[in-house]
Image (cartoon, rainbow, N blue to C red):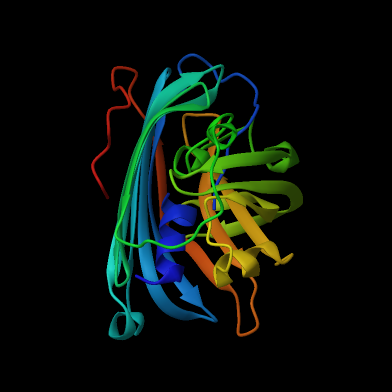
Length: 278
C-alpha cells in the first residue's frame, strides 16, 4: 500500500508513536477506545485506519489496521494490521508481545516479537523485499517499545507533561526515536465520539537502525519536518490515545485524524483480552 499507508499503519494504528515514565494509575482504572481514522494529503483522501484498545487494571491489548482508499487504490494496493498485548505496571503499559503484517505491491512482510521489560526476547521477521538496511545490533533491541503499545501514553490528565518524553520505538525491523515536546493545547470535535480538549505535541523523528539508508521517507521525516501528535483521553484510565498525526510537506500536510474516537470505562470484571478489530 505504498509508503504512506504502510507508515500510517505504524503511526496511526499502530504508525510513528508513544510511551515513557508516568504517574501511577488508580488500581480500578480501566477503559476502552474504539477509533477510526481518515488519512489524507492536502485534504485529499488516500487511506483509512482503525485502532481499538482495552486497558484493565493490570493488562492491555490493542489492535489496528490501515489500507489504501479513494483515488490511491488506482495506483497501489495493500493493507496492514498490528496487534500488541502487555501488562500495566505503575500506571503505564509494558509491552509483552507484538505482531504486524503488511501486504503491498513490492513488499509482503510479517513480524512477531516478544518483549520483557523493554528487551526483545524473541523475534521473527519475514519479508519478500531484500534491500540494504542500516544494520541492527543487540543494543537496538533493548530499552524499546513497539509502535502500537507506544500509542498508549500514560499521563495524569491532559497536560504538557504528556509531551515531555522520548519514545524509543522498535517495530521488529526498524529502530527509531520519536522525541516529543509540548506545543499547545487545542480542542476537537469528532464526527462520532469525543469532543473536547487535546494536548498537541511537536515530534522529532530520529532514525537509528533497520531502515534503508537511501529511503526517501526516512530522509524526509528526519529533515526537521513539522510533525504534530495530538493526544486525547481514554475514559476510565489515566492513559491518552492517538487522535491526530500530521506531517507538513510541500503540497500540504499528510494527516491521520480521527473521525471516530469513542471511549468508555470498562466494568471491573472485564479484562484486557485481545479486542476485536473495529
